[in-house]
Image (cartoon, rainbow, N blue to C red; front, side, top):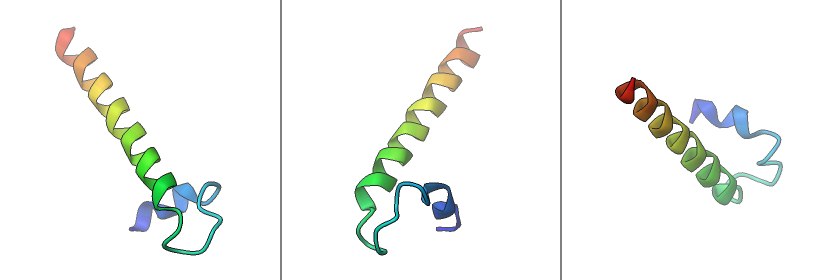
Amino acid sequence: FGNLFFLDDISVTPAGVPDGGSTVSLLGFALLGVAVLRRKLRS
């Protein structure tokens, strides 16, 4: 969980509450990774 400092602006609430924000950000990063991989595979 060392990457949680990236979500400081989102998870201002006490620990355990910002699960939604961290989940959304993780999903966003996953979608970005998939998009990048698709572009690399196509070219």
